[in-house]
Amino acid sequence: MKKAYVKPKTLKEAHFHYCPGCGHGIINRLLMEVIDEMGLREKAICVAPAGCGMLLYNYFDIDTLESAHGRGAAVATGIKRVRPDNLVFSYQGDGDLAAIGTAEGFHAANRGEPISIIFVNNGVYGMTGGQMAPTTLKQQVTTTTPLGRNPILAGHPVRICEVFSMLDGTSYLERVAVNKPAAVIKTKKAIKKAFQCQLDGKGFSLVEILSPCPTNWKMGTIEACRWIDEVMAKQFPIGVVKEIS
Amino acid sequence: MKKLMSGNAALGEAAVLSGCTCYFGYPITPQNELTEYMAKRMGELGRVFIQSESEIAAINMVLGASVAGARAMTSSSSPGMSLKQEGISYLAADELPAVIVDMVRGGPGMGNISPAQSDYLQATRGGGHGDYKTIVLAPGSVQELTDVVPLAFDLADKYRNPVVILGDGMLGQMMEPVSFDDIKPPKEYPKDYILTGAKGRPARMVRSLLFDTKEEEEHNWKLVRKYQRMESSEVRYETYLTDDAEMIVVAYGIGARIVRGAIKRLRQENLKVGMIRPITVWPFPAAAIQEMAKTVHDFFVFEMCAGQMIEDVRLALAGKGHIHFYGRPGGIIPTPIELYRIIARHYYTAARRKK
Image (tube, rainbow over all chains, first blue to last red):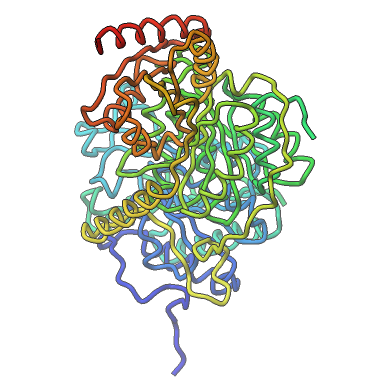
């Protein structure tokens, strides 16, 4: 019988620690599928973040370093400058890249470092229990915005792709999602494109992935997937934000 | 052959000759000449130089370069060192080698750009969060600054631990004749922990997160055992006229250089004053001070701060003897004559007390 799906070789035999309905598991699997398909298992170096993605090395059968919160792009810069022939990517959440590590991400992008950032945007600090993230939507309730995010007091949701698109060092920026099968397929293509951009020496690439966090959004898993299309994508439009050929 | 160079530039050349292939830095006085020297030299040699967006980014680039297998260095001064502490803690926890230069200036806060020794405790107590230590080398001349650079890289690789070179604004800025003839080509260290892409081998992970408390405790004990090995093998100090001394001055770095001038004058008047100068301020030469305390009662601590190393001298003496102290904080540099007068006054008071 023909197998419709095979688990990627580079994904270890371990149970994900992610909550039910979380997007990280899908993104982890996609990354390893892409690594396998592009034959990059022996070339890839991953920089894991602080946050829900910090245990990537339990799942990825590739060289991995766990970085301090927000410093992924600086660490990846150091690795890539020493090993320009390796594929170097950091995996960062919205608190990691859009709050505490904005400077590191912004300037790596501005220098056009040939690294790739996999930016998981779920609009909350997941691991710490659902506090407001820089990407939390206006009026969205979190544990630190119990009455909803009031932009007068707590600012506005940050659109990283659009901000980075203003920097001359960036080559490929795309926003995708993992809330439905068609979107997952597009996400995989975007990751492939980002890695190819790096391998071709074109410069900095980033894929922003809208990812469900039903636990902290206090939603059912299907409701969370719908909410991405109906609410979140209005603030964070899906699509290629910048691509330099 | 000797060249006339500033401490900062000489340090840069010594790092180049010691096989430093990556330098990351952010401008801050009084160490800018080092960053500028590296910008020029690393560029000429096709090595890695990045002027980073912050001290935090610089130390994390060092961490990335180190985990990729390179000899990497960053440098800063007091306020910038505070920012680097996060990264130094991670380097220690990840057991990654790195060399970090601190050309101390007056503090706290923005302070000023004058030479000071007020970051001794930050440097010798780890400085960041968690149970960790870094070897801290405190040279007292441009030549010695040059000499400790290859040593710093070797110790970092030997122990897989960050090493700090603790200078100050004077050491960085002043020019002295310096020779690089003794710097040998860098040794090869086996690096079975670095990330290169898992080619023909199992994947590696470098991390400091250990959710399992037992595992975390064992990791911390492993680090402690490493620090104990450093304490038993890496203590370095110099003694000056201690054989017949009735009072021993404890001073380090540029402070010790000023003390030396003061002692020359004191000796001309037959005051029996000597000096012990820690070259590693961590690990501290506590055993040497304890040994001296068998015959000497009076120890005089001089620092260009309000008193930080005095804590280590107190710990070393463990209640024995008598500690005298003179300090000048805020970037004030006392002259040898000033020190000579102060030490003499303490010496005569101690002599009267003995009668």
